[in-house]
Image (cartoon, rainbow, N blue to C red):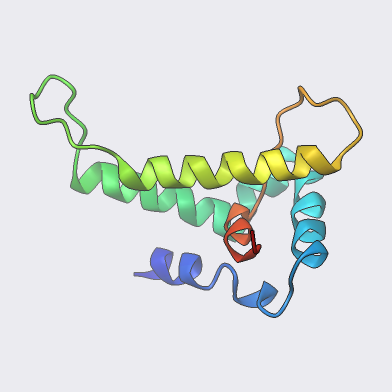
Amino acid sequence: ENTLQHLSAATDAAEGSAGSALLTLLVEQAGLKQSELDAHPVRSSMKQLLRSLDQLCPFEPERDEARPDYVRSFLDYVNTLGSVLVRSLSSEDQSSQVKLGNPLLVLLQTP
């Protein structure tokens, strides 16, 4: 429950921000060191949620009805989308990998 509360509140601090303010938050997070990323509450909650789901519903690829991992796919998609947004704003090398502390901020960005 604690993990889900962290994730559900992940965008509360940024609510009311829009457009470039959200993108600025994402760019700031892209500059975090690996140790800071690992300690970020949203990123650690995302990892904890995936670990808990793996314990509750172990993945068994040899079974015919292997369960699709929608939560992991969704979080991977949000991470990728955030990385693409940050890289598109940067004039630096586009091949570098971008990791964000709170990629869920992408969900607040209007199309």
